[in-house]
Length: 212
Image (cartoon, helix red, strand yellow):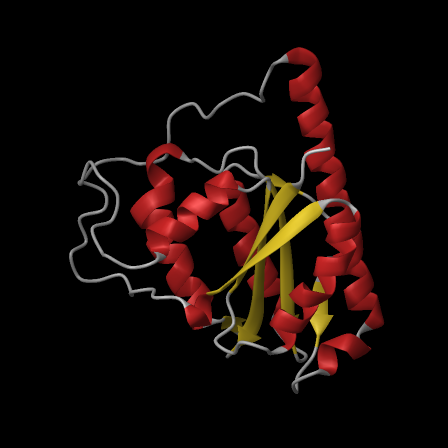
């Protein structure tokens, strides 16, 4: 059986924090199902902020900045599944994840929607507040990029404040595990469909990109 890959984007500014801990707990679970988990720690890559050029709607080519955004997008395109994982900061999405969404979404993904029909999941960590606001933003990004969102019953939200507290939210961790198993199931179903029929799901029909 072919080993599949799920790529997780960790939008936390703190490597080794609660979001990292939740993702690391997935590695042995996915390995048992012959799925390799790759984790992109945005705190450990070169990622420029969107600048003042403002020409993304008019330029015929992807973003001209030279950093790791392009290679991360290529890894997303190559993966079988995508996880957006992000903590709540200041009642909203951690700034590093917001920066990533802007750079990759406006600078690369809007041209051809290359993540269309990728299986996707969302994980949010945080202390007590605004989890669902962040969850909703990431969910909207999944939908905008025409991915196939997989749920878990309860949203995959883990309550944790101090370092190491994620492990104590058993209900949240359980929701994360259910979501990930369903992601693998959906990846397998889509793979079998391609093998049996030789067909892929419908490709994107145009994009939302409107030149100014």
